[in-house]
Length: 496
Ligand code: ABU
Image 1 (cartoon, helix red, strand yellow):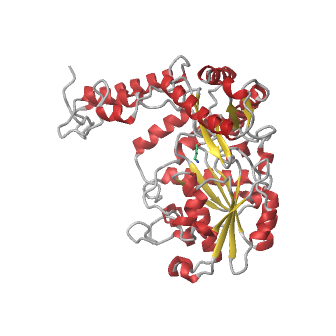
Image 2: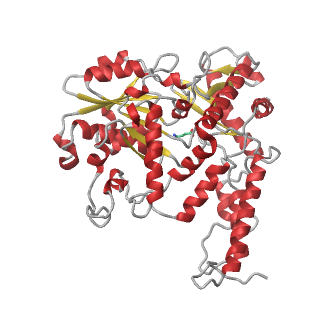
Image 3: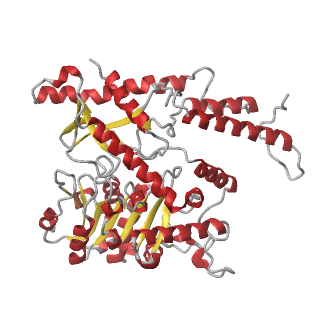
């Protein structure tokens, strides 16, 4: 019998080695069996329970924190239960989010990262990871198209923070005195983005003191590309326009703003051009699809999330900046206890002072390791495969009885947006009653889907369009049969 040791650890004397190794091997067994089941399509995507059920405790699984230590057996049960009642986001029938899949090499990278348990702020304690980050960011800048990959960048805790960096750096570029004197030192600044852009641009406007009223949301045309003609009309007297965000792959529709047109305007009016390619950035790896971001090399900064279309385990988001020095200038506080200037190595490798955070997780290793394992060509194939699958879905449902597309024409990304109309709605005349009833369909089907645990897909309203399904594909493990399954499952659950 295993001794009841609450915290197994290999001590410097080598004692406790056996129970520690046994414990870790059992954890690995739990994880590998979870992964195998996730890839087995007969396994459910989730075993849904309402919050009160999980809080009350199910079959002995308690979320309450004990005063006394639990046995190792119970800790292993807790690990199993945590996975059991979670959602299998790596399942080939999980289509709910932009980040999906389990990449095995990426996963190994994350395990190694946790084992190393270090911090990205200084070369001193993360020499290998800091260099990996520098080299990978350079490679990403080359792919964006900046000469020799020159520029700067950093990995951040997600696309919203990367976008926030872009607003901060733009402000610093044009009004560096704000860093010390605050917003009172600047005239009234205006930012622009499209109404379909990610809400993080709005959050950044609020958090950084611009105010959401000073973020102008531009209308979009019927293909949901930003209509930047309106932009010119928006340059109001007494305001100073400083920043434009162009989205490469909007969250709901997967639409790409016309970057070259926007870049022309930014150059003319001397404004910062940021491209939010959190979702679309992966397509830069594809010679077939990268033309959708034509002009991206003209951007001053780019957000690109490898944890989305490239399948890197969460989280992995980069902010890339064309001009070197701005990140450092904008954010540095020169904390003497951490960033001593008289270290015995080149302290420009202490990248931590460029960040808005202090402690920073090592997000680079899993990505670097995946790139090693696949090569650039492997990412390209993976991304092309997902886009091919979404084209398959689009052609399957565009004329299918009961399905109605939300916008005309082929999707630009893997987002396929559609309504499902149960039989009783199909022959109703267009009008308020039909809209009201249709609005309830997607949430109802989604609830049944989750309760039966068979698949997951997102839905939302958008503007004056009532709730519709947003199908996205970023998991290379998904196949045509999974797409067929989703369509048939919607039909099955959507029966009157
Ligand atoms: N940027 C957040 C991603 C949202 C989604 O997965 O739908």
